[in-house]
Length: 72
Image (cartoon, rainbow, N blue to C red; front, side, top):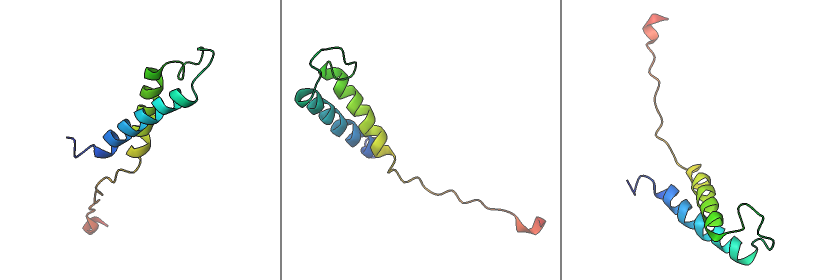
């Protein structure tokens, strides 16, 4: 399972790290920001975005569409 979803897992890890770094270096001074007010929120949001971003690069096997040309 890990080999099958290695892009998504990599995106989760990198996104969580990026989200935490965003909270640490930029953050939200007032505490009213929904995503950046707490490190858990930033890391979770980053993990989801990272997984979605890297899942776009997954190559699915092509399905061949076999048609019966004798009916034409």
